[in-house]
Image (tube, rainbow, N blue to C red; front, side):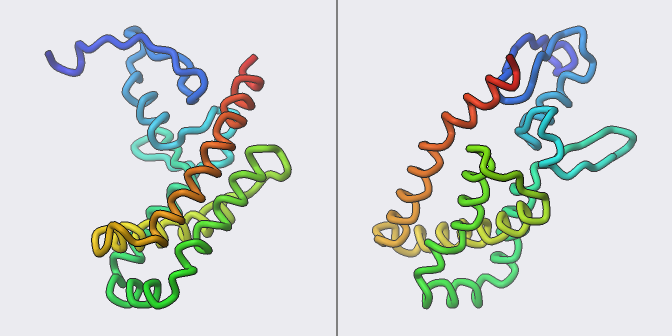
Length: 171
């Protein structure tokens, strides 16, 4: 069946897509909105707004920074890997600014800006690339698992607050 005949009728209020339906010709762009911005329409100031062929495209600012960090690491992989492996504390420190900024913003202590989101995302992206490199070199490395445990735990503690905040804004 061609995609043009696919009918969608889903509601994902917590994730920022309010309604996709078969009457909406722009239903695939709504899915694109969810995947690229993953913010509510009230939080579009946390995204980078692009206009391509007359269509609005919103890309999460922090995720843009992560992509930049991944790219930098890949371009300078040899030097970056050597530097990070010789300074293993970087695996714990590089993502810290992004996590602190995200947590403080999520719990309402401050509102960040896109420059901070991009810079902290870039640091996180470099760390993620380094951690993947570390994982594939030595999957039993304690630093890899410790860093993963710390940041996944922080993420899981704060995530319910994020969903609660989105639910309150919606209602």
